[in-house]
Length: 384
Image (cartoon, rainbow, N blue to C red; front, side, top):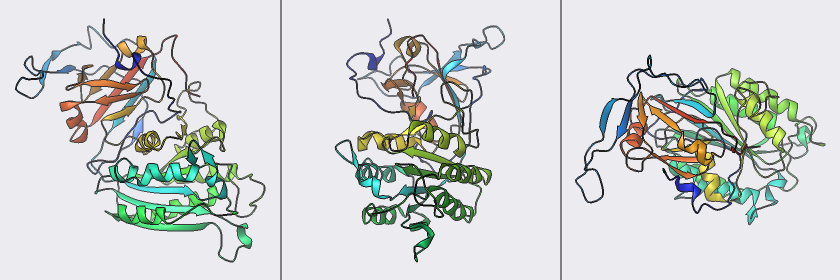
């Protein structure tokens, strides 16, 4: 019987809801994502290991076996998968703007630290943080936003601390982020800040993908009316405007200050979809992204929040049971990837895959299309 690594000895550690596909910016790549059903590929081949490619034997390139399936005689079962997405890669460098909420509530406790410190560490850590994993060919910028008194503040609203988009400016982004703390009395003018971020990204020349990664912990307000916090309609409209300009907005809910319904709405709006769609219930709904209070795990989530970009770590967006795991199917550029730790894929935990060897090299190199499917089962744990 096939053994699924995470079934044995994996604890109860919970990684909260994340994006369907984890990705980091590597090899100067970005992409566009869609969610079609997985269709049969002609001449599917399984990426396997040479018989002598075992510990102690001489290493060699993987062998491509004859087609496993004849699409006409043995088509892909027409079954709706609980995990079912396609990742498409391009060779165009991406531009990423980190849009960070600096309101007073970001200083509130979160896990063993504060919301601000957990988020910041997950981004700036020199070894495991998001910035450490960004490829040098990626342009990255930073906007730390808040407000204080709205439009009555002589300094204006929103109040923005900014690092412009440059290649290789990771150290500057890290330095500026480390020098800032949550603002006492700071508000959360999220809608206006998304508009400012979209304006800055829109001025960047080039056809590569552009992303806004918004991290916020509470209900938005507006510059016009900082109190009470009733700015969700404006935030949703701003995310939709950004998408209409070709900018993808990913929203990370830091703690439960921004409730699940709000994070879901922002996830949909940032993808140009109906904000009222519910992930797991409505077709096409975007998976919401909630921050883990462990900086290392949060860093992994952030690696995937930029969308379909190159990585060998794949977040399935939901927990997969043993039954579904045994029926999992990954296809990379027409090649069915085997479930093995040399040139195929294995589980890290119930919701995360790791791709190995030649298959990983292909993804980080010139791979173009990765399809991931795990069928539904009665024991599937639904992400909420």
